Image (cartoon, rainbow over all chains, first blue to last red; front, side, top):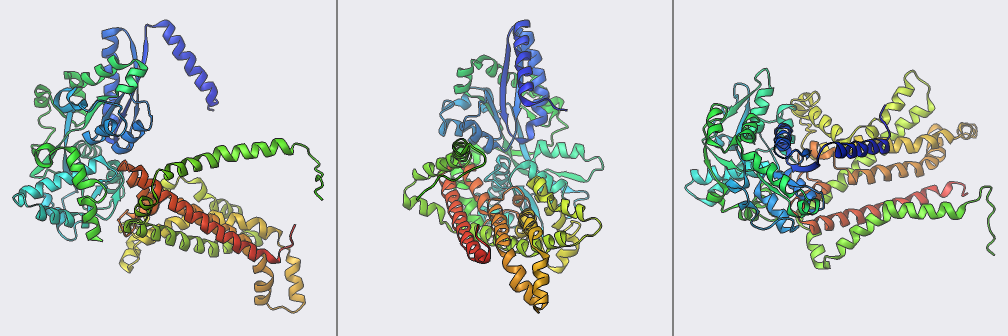
Length: 337
Length: 276
């Protein structure tokens, strides 16, 4: 039987107090993250706690919260006390500055590599034997091909999906925006359901068996492939894709209040260390450190990648043009109805 | 002349105070919060945000599908309640328990299950889709999900009323020469109608706010299968709180109007009931 909640809270409080009295200092951090990083941070948190105790003698406990990237950012703006955020895209972290003034405007310059300690990309997943012969983005706009991707309005991953396809089309048509839009409209017509998040889309494709091809985070795709023991799925690497940079930062307002700035900063910096990079690579996120990258070279397929800054002029601009109310995505959906 | 009514138990002041406090804390304060935020909008902005063609399409689907589902439940739920109350048969208690299933099941699970069932390769979908009946990712799917979540409301409202319905009255009607149809139309139906309408209103109100089960089965295609609560979530994801609130206020106003209308209907329908 469960104890009543009040008793459990009391016991927990007592435990923390006793811990306090016995060992040096006890700190907790809250890391607010997006969906597919569950396994990564579970591992990383233990590694960091060990590292931090060796370095300072303090005990650190990290609590995790996962969900759609935009929803998580909104929760933090609305008062969820996150010491650090590790979200799917820079735009959602930007919102912490723009809508909540919780972090400085130049947050992205505070950590190396645009505050993205690991990267990923967008790939395609098809069913065993690739019955619809899907080789590249072109095959996704053919009539009769059913494409599963979440809604870019609600999912950070889906925005990367959309931009990857758009970037491919733009490149293919020599920079012709009109043709790229047409390509995208045809792709959207092949989407039978707009799931709200990347995990939801994955479930639709994998468990419910809907759709011919899933557009997904590389790390999610590799995880799904590893878990499908009977080889029900195959990975299709497109000829061109986007360099997805999930970004991290500490939340100044919260760490100042709670006095956790040093440990929060160390927590994120340690992601760039060989051990942090190794953990990321183990969970199929592409490491930044070349030495770790070489070690895991055969995990990650070779893909030609473009960045969002090169093709779209950064997140703010991409968001305004494509995803805001009345943007290109809305126009496409309106025309497709 | 107002005379103090006699009560066997004291404590009117205390219980009334608590009632008012509880209602305020649970219902009125959040409701006022919503209205206060809505007041930040100018009337013109509110109107523009609340009546985009996408929003209109979403209202149509939400209210249309909710109404169809509520009416279907009113008809078949009445039948179900009748069978459960009037007849003894093996497994009756089990059937009775099954009615509560939609109450207990998390709606997200219901939505996922229904969507898998009706998808082109699902258990039912593989037979229905070739016949042209598409239950997943269509407005029909929305109706199916809403019928599922609304079922217990009608049955549970009707059961006690049916139990109290005296058989002797029907027998008397029969003795006095009324045919089966006349007994139903003039004796049974009028006494059941208010309860049916209450059940309908409850199922309808529940359906308008439903989100969890529908997002999985509807496919969320804008203008086609996008429900109003989902559009609110989309606006929130765009950090557009004001647009979300505008939509929420419209839903709320509609629900109030409809509940009011159904209340009036109920009063009209219960004109035969002895007033207490």
